[in-house]
Image 1 (cartoon, rainbow, N blue to C red):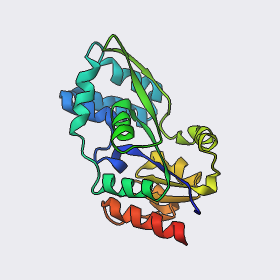
Image 2 (image 1 turned 90 degrees about the horizontal axis):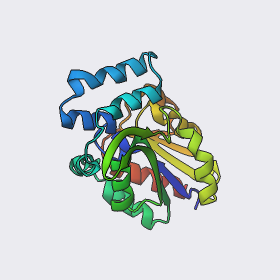
Image 3 (image 1 turned 45 degrees about the horizontal axis):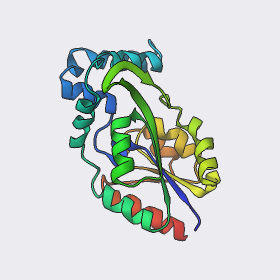
Length: 216
């Protein structure tokens, strides 16, 4: 097999929603009142990514972790994503999910779609309640920092890896994999540098391209 491992982004790629952080705020009704400013300040360079995460997490301090986890049961997968990912697994690909989102969707993807490995940022809980702290495993735009660990874990070389993502944050994946796919991309730069850019929001296109590319 020409390619052995596929690395997927989660938010906006495997799932339809764009940001785990924003999703929680919207479900709790505080996005438009307050929380959107943190994201604006981060992208404007006024605060660090860590500060952005800490400000977000502080709003959820004391809440039952189970309550937040339950919110993510309503998140829908992208069209045909579960079916296509199952087919890719049967083809023998190892599957990895890499996200700057939060553990609730990452844990669900790992369990439901049977991923071999998944990593994201995590809200810290103690005795079942969120502490307001956050463990940052991946910073925005820094997904490449985890790749060496992943390649070593699975015994693969970068040229044996396919990456699939949808946004600016997935550019490091595209630049450090053997073949890259931009899925329903919100980033002109990702679309430009990716080896293939999907023209639909149907994961079946991703599946067919991966299979045909692997046989080439």
